[in-house]
Length: 176
Image (tube, rainbow, N blue to C red; front, side, top):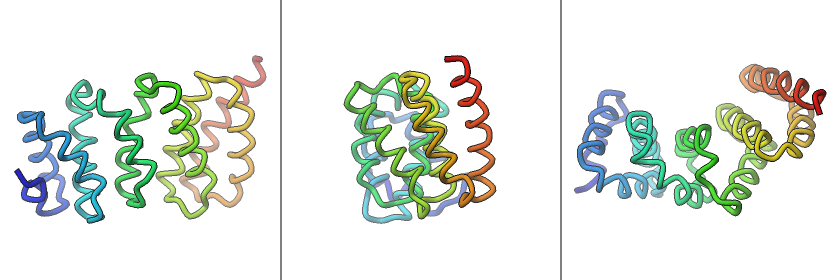
């Protein structure tokens, strides 16, 4: 089956129908993930959205693919794919081995420090790094310093997320 036939447009209804199809035919999930990283940015955006919606409806179906998704995620230049698939890591850091965990942290630090990254990408990276700092508390001070450094240049969306995370970090650092 050609995934492109399932995703003729970017409407939510189309994404929902494609998600239902993936849920009914789980064997095509790997193909949907592959298309998420295709050179066709529009198709990548559509497919990655379906992967995320599939995860929301059946986390177990997607969860075992999360470590492999990370390898491609770190290589893609498609900002929509990055934005969509970063959501998978908000609840699933524990499925990553030490090497993949380090790769995710490095990728998120690069996004957070990149003023050219989308606001949503930077905010998601900040949230993932905060979660990682609860696993490795030594990250807290570094994360706090980077957020504070980029705070003034940040957009309102960046500042909103930063303020929330800085509040938590300050409280946790004081309790050390």
